Length: 264
Image 1 (cartoon, rainbow, N blue to C red):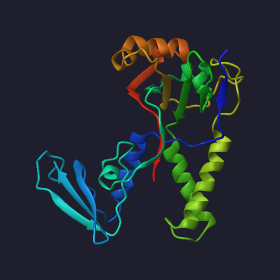
Image 2 (image 1 turned 90 degrees about the vertical axis):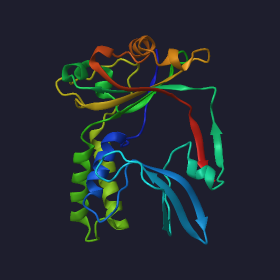
Image 3 (image 1 turned 90 degrees about the horizontal axis):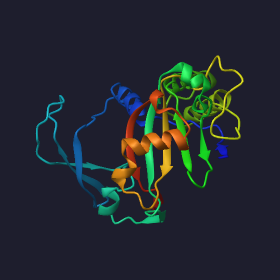
Image 4 (image 1 turned 30 degrees about the vertical axis):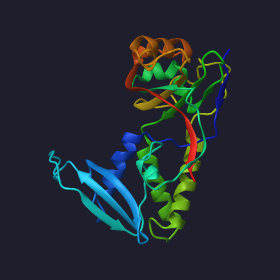
């Protein structure tokens, strides 16, 4: 039997949902947000960060090619991922390793059927690993209620400190509240196999609308086209993850290479 190793209580965010919250929050601040904008070049000139950008939007969402623009600032924060153009332009190298011979298949899904979640093992597990040499699997759930948790943690922090919202002291209180919520509300337990069933099946621990991510190790002799095919995804979900694909809404299927790296 495969063994499931569950982690300590953690909070995972579904990126599209998180970006929605972020944009809503930014709309209440005096900031300029440039969407549909490509960073062409980043450089340090006389100790000042200089960024050249090109926008394909006229500001109201309509597509329109616009002239390049240069922005100068004391600080620039680049969050453009593992293939960061910014890092290459600034000549920054990586520390750590990458594993090109161990590609992983990511299957992002949502489950909305409450009756299925009552009996399926994914309805009672937060995150962990299937330690099966023939079919190693990583699974992560990001419940749809974290927006409510965030508002609740903000309110709790405001009641505990007079520090302004956004200050280090306020964030510390809010983070502590989020960790307490995760420890108290996320699933617990270490089932013996993939498929498990809670003693209390009347109320699933993971609510409908939750985003579930499954990550499967791709065999070395399998092409990306084969790995992402409907037939292979269906088989992996059924036989490796032991879930019923009929109850899963597949949102994204992609092959990626794991980078255990950071900028120097």
